[in-house]
Image (cartoon, rainbow, N blue to C red; front, side, top):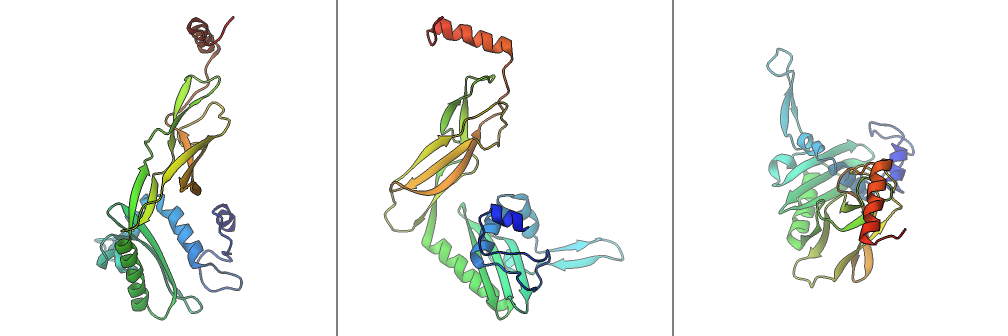
Length: 245
């Protein structure tokens, strides 16, 4: 868990156990919890589970157990579908929540609340503020072709490059939007390479300042060409004049 926290760039989190109960030198922050939540919701399957309000274990048997989600927002706040409540004596009542409206997903974190009712109220205030004050602009999607790469010794002369996640920009409603653009920086790509493999980064800029770095990949798997395929390509380049004998 600590190794993964370092990979996510979390500088103020240290785990001493897996269950979250109070223990010396076991700590985190609201910011780090939000970053963990951001990574978690990238795995969309989790939201199918965290959005369930109630269910039964061993349903329709003499030993069935009724389970109710401690995150009441998934039932009472429109768009809420996660994520995790918590309580210990030292931490108080905590909630890392997420909700989605009009294509925009927000993540909120509250900690140290005196009771669950206050925890819910404060979370809803944060979500209301975010949805009322901000809007999301989609710059690129995961299917947007943002460039082409020539990969030596591959079955394809050129392959399409796509972002590994949707590229969105957050704007405050009513304010003038900043000038946005992007730059593509590719690694030295070696075959074989699979769709989903990171082959470079997309730099998202606002007013020429880098605000995000998005990993990019090939649009489809690229295999290594055999000697016959390379020879045919070589002859084609000679005929087209791209290379000379």
